[in-house]
Length: 205
Image 1 (cartoon, one colour):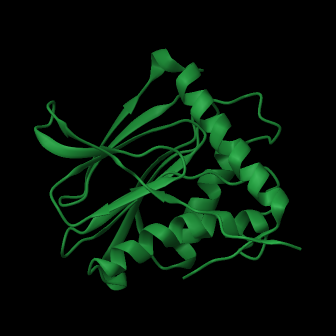
Image 2 (cartoon, rainbow, N blue to C red; image 1 turned 180 degrees about the vertical axis):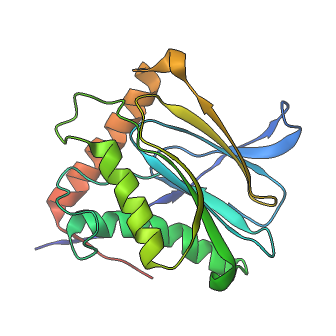
């Protein structure tokens, strides 16, 4: 069996947000970003889930945007290929926070997404399974989830200010089934499926 390392990538869409008058970055499916600066991290979620994790003492924090691959059976089993994909997405962000000086004992998390917005994917309840995985993973790692907005049928936009821990959620009621969101998540889902078909995932932790 071949060996494959699934690469979560660092978000590169940096810009100045004139609404909030602050430097910002947009995080797409399969991306993450961590910062020690006063920044705004933004993502738009359908079935995917984002974990917003920060060190409450230093304000170092970040956000990821992930989905489990199609062959998920039991999201809580880290040894399964699907669980290992999710674990890799979380570890990429957490390890980056540690590199920047965050301490495990100071971490807190907020979890968002998992909406039932992509009805025609083969897997059923994919948003629910993504949400379940995120909650189970953070519990297993001893990182308290202090806030969450999960499931529902609508996409949502998440605005995270790591320095303060503030999060704003905008439900996109008029974008239910929005083609851009669905297209991005379908492309991400297809990459996950293709990667999982190639072999196991190696975790570099």
